[in-house]
Image (tube, rainbow, N blue to C red; front, top):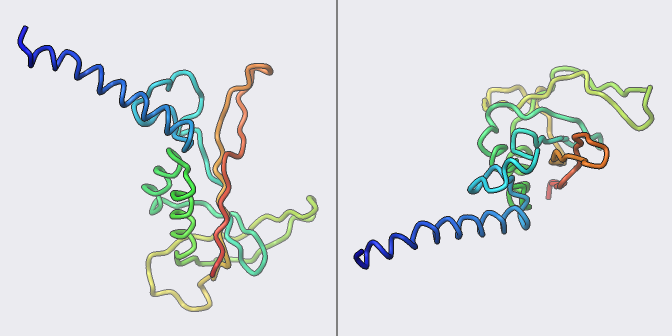
Length: 171
């Protein structure tokens, strides 16, 4: 066995060990999904990027309005769902805030629940600058919540919990 063969014999396990340590560190410190970054431990958890979800609100004239993230946010949303660091949440919130939002109806408060409301309008992000000024919605801020899934072994059920929240306001 040559020196190169001996070196290669140790090289592969060393790389695997480095990937394992890196993934464990990022899972514990940055909230990385166990399904990402090497996949070690992926079958030990129900938490994956496909089970994580956002609740996103635009603040418009003092009212928090829930919005749905459309396809043109896919890459940034996927990165942030996989690793919800403050930097990733901030970048996504700024991108959402700077978007061109259009209102297609009116807000209506839901009187059946105190302090709650439901939008009866659809707000979408538009790339086009050909919008009339009265169609545009100017947001005062954005609130992002990322929710994770976990298995509650005591009650034998899958639950969700708010993992992180980020609030971006106009400066």
